[in-house]
Length: 495
Image (cartoon, rainbow, N blue to C red; front, side, top):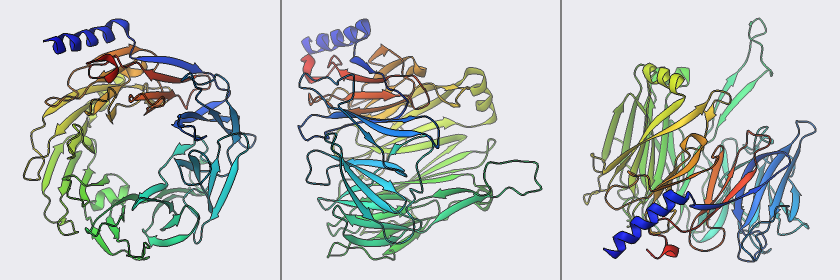
């Protein structure tokens, strides 16, 4: 009874005080395009990195502000130091890959990987040239600077997987080449005819699609392999005993899901995810196939268990069909038992829904949780369902707040939670539970939530904090939120 009363009191307090997080703001000169937490100087505390763009090409200046976390647990208003982003840096990763203090920035550039230690104003730089064709990091991103996983844990050692046109180079952190794997290539071009009444900015426009890379043990030899997936096929590269990789795939799985109609007009999608769903040490496979148009959209989700190092694509272990919806599927261990649940995020997709979006300026989605059964299949009946609405700005054609965040444990109770932005007006927390996760809003806090959000425990108290930034605003501050531990189940509130 006392536990129940304490839980009720915690929920009531969070509602009444609207005080889940302590909010601090940092003003930045320029447009903030990325923000992240990491320990850059090796003192065990997570610092704040803010990447900003100032001006317009060719005079644009790109820089990273480093705010070192103070001993009092706060970030200084002014940056501890500022680092110029090297020219033609496309995307970045953060990892501890060198002997210098703390974590480093790993940058993808057209013909090299550049590693930066930004522990202080005296930046240390390493450049690793890349053999073969250009990387997919052809140039700076004109409108942003995104984080992208380049460093992968491969048998307890970090390796850098460098995406190139048609290849992926596998490098040690000191630049030794462990192999180049042939992942294939996909591209779509648009060439405007000179006689056309349509005028475009360039002679040749290119959409380059790089394969989705995943790592893990496919064949059960306790070595980490590489899986490269496109909408047409999956290529598996098994790691050799010497730690290297062969250029040609060990085997290939054709998917044969895209129809000729969808292929010719560039519609539909095939999204793959590989995880060890049943904790047997082998990677299993989820494939989500979207096909059709406004009038006949359909999503089919296939689940394939790994049997003796292979997926039998002709015999799925599970198959979910949803007519009239666009689905995004996630594999998450939401209750910490070591087994994954299938999280299906469903968007209704029809002409009627499009009209409703235009009228209400909101997109409705449903999150459904399917539990893994003892026989290794997912329950066809979801254990819980929850509807969320996300506002759409007609000025920017993007969400008015950040998209719902799943797979994060806000109160550190071992259960995954969902955090939403309430159309840019407040943070809302839906705590996970054993029986019906995400079905009830636990707490909310009024604040502007437009932009992108990242969660991390920056002050090492065991609770997730956040950084929020708006890459399309010219004057929005960066906001950090320190988790106050008032949510039910948080270790700091005694529940």
